[in-house]
Image (cartoon, rainbow, N blue to C red):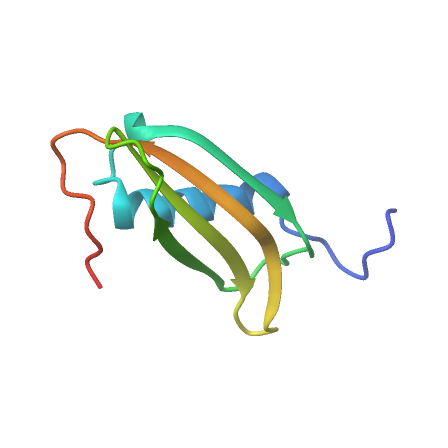
Length: 100
C-alpha cells in the first residue's frame, strides 16, 4: 500500500536489534543502563536481512555517561538502514570496555 515490493521489517524491530547489540557490547546487558537512544531510518530492512550494527564509543566529558555512535546495515544488501544513531548509557560499577 505504501509502495514497497514486499513486506518490510518494522522500524522498531530494527531499532531493537541495534539497542540489543549496543547493550550487549557496552552495557553489560543491563537495560537500566540506557539513558537515551536516537537514530534516523535511512532505508527499509526486510524480514530475513542480517542487521549488522557498527558502533563507536566516543568521549562525552561526563564520567557518569558513555556515548555510543552507531549505524545499522542490511549486511547482504550493503544498505545502511539506520544512520546516524546515538546511545547514551549511564555508567555504574560495570565494565564498559569493548569485548572485541
